[in-house]
Image (cartoon, rainbow, N blue to C red; front, side):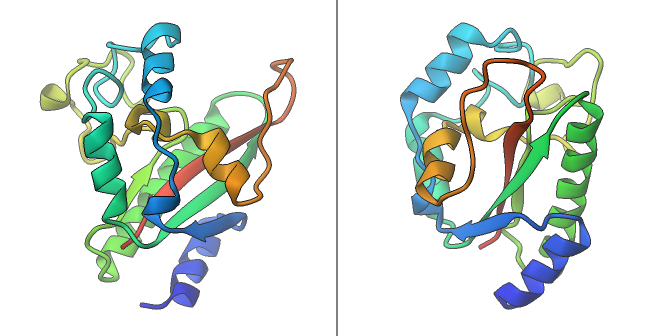
Length: 173
């Protein structure tokens, strides 16, 4: 399947703002994981977040095995229902790309997994493994630098009412 067919799939699910990169273009940094550990209230409570993720070295090796990754932009303002809809669409896209022959297809979600009101906190006991995916930061992705390097918008916000530039990733092949 060529890029044009993949782009048609992206558009079908409403993902019209994206750029293609290689897995080696994802900027992986230890500080991202440590920032999660020390500043995120969900750290240690979600199966798809730290400390349940592979090491930074394993994440780097994992991403290096992909030659085609879609960085998908979504401007978000308001409640989390927009993020939940985005993530559901991203999962449906991942499935369609997989069924089209890209057996390595995997999505990284916006904001992480929120399928359960109370997460078990462990991947082994996750109740929705087929729908659960880590967010890029849990895998050590420095989203700011990665998207900045390819010319997509992102900035530090000073007010929760400002529109947010959020990113999901679809690892294809």
